[in-house]
Image 1: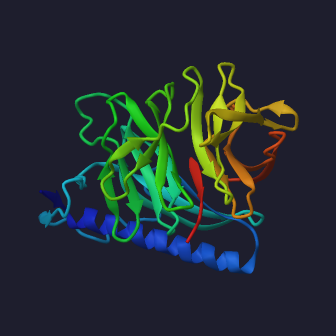
Image 2 (image 1 turned 180 degrees about the horizontal axis):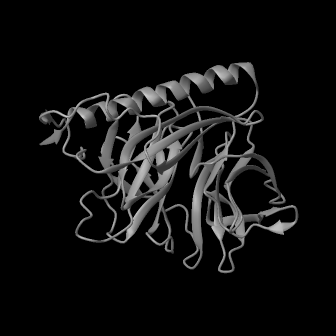
Image 3 (image 1 turned 120 degrees about the vertical axis):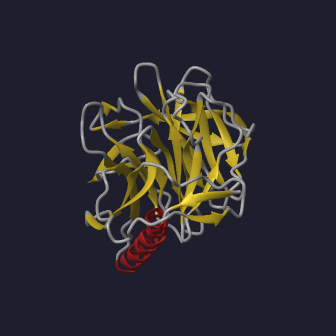
Length: 310
């Protein structure tokens, strides 16, 4: 199978690998100088930090696809904005934009694999005939690799990606409007094929989002009740029903807006990312697993975050 790819698009895709390599280098260097955390945020928006005239438009060049799962890149994209934050310093180390998302798509998942590769899930938000590209996962490596996710129904989306400690990629599948039922899935990083993990059973009437794994192997997620209150939940493979740990709250006030991301540091500290309803920007919080109390660390203008690894 072959696709048309202009030199401009090829150059823009090549930029992704260099951007991510720079982020990895910067965060690793910073970590060597301070015990603070290294966090990477992602969002989509207008193109910034990219010279769109550097590679002139020319006749298209046909590139041979090495796998039938490759995705055509002749799309009208928005930018993926990658930023790096060192908590405790509030230092933006990089802010680059790379074009991979169409206007009718959303970033539904973001994580870092055990080898340091960033992975983003991109999901169509409409069901119109214009929806040419299905849900896919893109590995922001050099070179960039994109795989169509197989096994999803038209009204479903893949979100809350998690690169596990043992090298797997897992996620949560639910309806595109975020409503149940929610299923835990394993994703093949070579083919994009999805398989359901039956060991954990989620409530059929409550929203589940975000996945985090701590160094001890324990998995955590967040559950949003019908009134908007958000509950911290632990997943135990030996116990099908999720273990409710406590209601999330800030300064005694119940958290009322779900979370954008949930991650766990190398020391086992659980971190939540989001904002209370009608408030901006999103903030990184440390979370007490026993009480659900959230302590603000840093504001961070991003959509989702992950912990840099590798």
